[in-house]
Amino acid sequence: MTTRQQGFTLIELLVVVVIVAILFTYTTLAIRSNSPEDLIKEEAQRLERLVQLAMEETILRGEEYGIEVFVDGYRFLRLSTNQQQKNQWQPLSTDKILRDRKLSHDMELEMRLEDTAISITTALDPLSDNNVELDDNLVEVEEDTKTTIKPQIYLLSSGEITPEFDIRFYILGVETSYIVKGLFDGTLKTEISDL
Image (cartoon, helix red, strand yellow):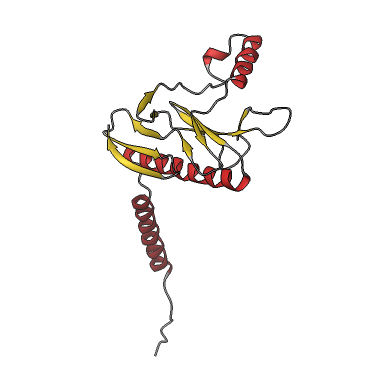
């Protein structure tokens, strides 16, 4: 009479591990969709949430914030309240959440303020070829940008947005785009739109 041992063989355990790994891979891929439409939607929803957060901060702090929009990204600004830089807009570059946002290389933005199309430029990139001719020229370009920082959209401490805006996120060649709308009363919404 032989006694039969209880348990699994090494082969059986390896088969189970392989099956679990395959299922985990497919589940991760199903959850994480990288289609262009999903990327556009994700970026538009991110802007909506960030604007909502910035508006809450303006109300809590009693400070005025702004948004400077570029073709390839956007950044949040705060109206300086200290005596040396009174009434100057300062980027929130050190803020981990409201930091400068640069879109992926193929995504772009269009902006309308109160139903008027606004021409926006590409963000000044200190590493771009246009700025590296001479060190002296680079310093001059940086000084010019510091004096011309001005938001196109104002987030007021009263909870209002001025002017009302539509910011469209799109990728050339993709028919679907998303628009983030900001209304005067502080209402924000993201809508799907055909390009």
